[in-house]
Each structure stands twice: as C-alpha cells, then as structure tokens.
Length: 353
Image 1 (spheres, rainbow, N blue to C red):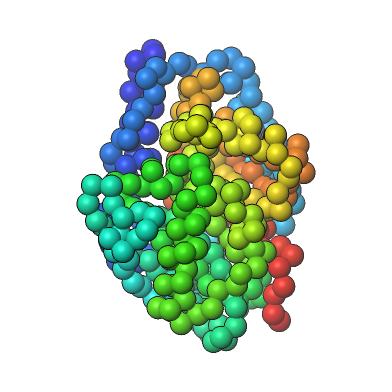
Image 2 (image 1 turned 180 degrees about the horizontal axis):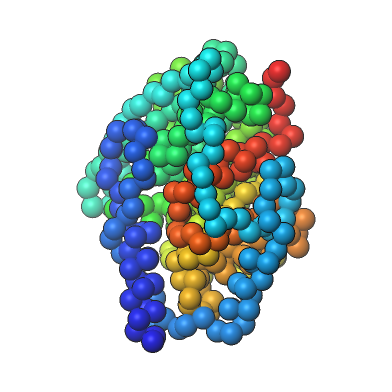
C-alpha cells in the first residue's frame, strides 16, 4: 500500500515540477505539463486519520457562487468554460507583444549550467492610453496565454468589470524552474522588477504603475508559490495574488525557510503581522499528495487548506476554492473560475466607466 501511494505521488510530482520548453511562442495552446521530477519524498506515509478528517470538511462547506465574499468554498464537480473566454463581436481587442530575454544578460538568473532564453508576452488592452500608468498582472509560466487571459480581459474591461490593465506573462527558466519558483525569498520579485518589467515597458510601449494596489501576481503549482512569495516578500510592490494548486510545500528549503514554502502556513503567516494582501487560491480534490500524510509536508490539499485557515485567523481578504473531482492545476477548473477570481481580486480598485 505504501509503495503504491509512493509511486502515485512520485508520478504526480513529476508532472508538476520539471522544466517546460524555453522560449516557446506565446500561443494560446494548453499549458505544457512539466515532465521531469526534481525530487520526491524519501519516504511516503499514507494520510493519517486526522488528515483525512481535516480534508473531509471541505466538500461540506457552503458552495462558491458569483459575488461571494471572503471565505472557504467548494465548487464543481462540473466545469463548463466561462463565457468571458469567448471573443465577442464589438468588443475592442487588445494586442500581445512578444519578446525573448537572454539569461546571459541577467544578473539574477544567468543560467546554472548554460545560458537559456525566456519568452515574455505582454497583453495591452485596446483602451490603454499611452503614457498613463496602467495596473497590471504578472504571471508565471506565461500562464495567461494558456487560459485565454487576453480575451477574458478584453471582455471584462469592455464590461467595466475590471480596470484597463496590462498583463506581463513570463515563461519559466526551464530546468531552473523550481529554483526560481520554489525558493522562498525575494529574488524572483527583484528579478521581475529590475529586468523584466522595464523591458516589457520598452517593448510594449506601456507605462506600468508603481502602486502595489494596481499590481497582481498569478500562477499555478510552483508558479502559484512564487506568485505568493513575490507579494509576501514585497508587499510594497504587490497586493493581489491568484494561485491554482499552489505549491505551498517543502521543496526548496534553506536556513530562512527550513521547510520551504510550508513555512508560510507553519510559521510565516501565523507569526507575522497581517500584510495588505488580497488572495484568491484554489486546490483540487485530487491534487498532488492528497492521499499522503501532512507530516511529509507534501500534501497540496492540506497545505492550501491550512494556508486559508491561517489567513482567515489573521484577517486577510481571501477566497479559498476547493475544486471537486479535479486534479492539479486542472485546465477545466481554471477555464471556468478565472474571470470570477479576477473580479474578486480587483474589488475596490477604481474602474473607469
């Protein structure tokens, strides 16, 4: 039994953590599933009765609904695509500007073994007024391009449900993805601020706001972890965070984070004053490690559930959605929930009518 669970976790972990192709075009094809395991737990222990009891509370919570406020919600098990993903006649269409960054020119990520290239895609809405400072989204793994984010923004900006905003979608560092995303520090946020955003402004001919209220991070799996990490370590830069199947588990650890991103739920959030963050987060019923003990610190469901609990205790504005009958960074879940998640996160931000 333990061997079977261990093999299952290793297989799921392999899907979640390896490198994606680098410098691939910013096309709207489904996000590639990384397929090389960085490492797996030395020993896998089945979920303890208390872990099972903890997770069993999630399906019984009040269901997620349009306009829901702060709190924990189950959703599913069926996920029809959101209508905002479909191009509508008469809606102004933004443009996507693409460019490539060479790691050999980076002071932060020059390449551990050799230089590599990183694709960046910048969505600019048709309503953008050149020279004005625009609110924006930064996404890991160029996430937005895989889930129709430009079309969603076209529709929701036109409907005055979101502000006129830019999206900067950044590919990962390939074989260095886990090092970039799972490391619990301010390094990736500093890299984006110093190297990616200035280049995005130049290439797309936009000006990006410095106001943290107008800046959001977005990602899934380890890309979700780094999205939260950026805002946690740099709340003066980012106040809004969106994560799917966030990897708040023990992967990359060091002296300041001996249990990796598990430290957020274990120590960082409960032991720190609340920060001015607004968070939307999701985890799936069949996410990685769902049948394993929390003592391994590799159970994605428990990790996200406890993240939500400590944020609630600290008074954060957050939504935590538990996706029934779904898996790790499940495309059907993202395609259904992304517009409503964006609307929750940008609540309170001025929208031009």
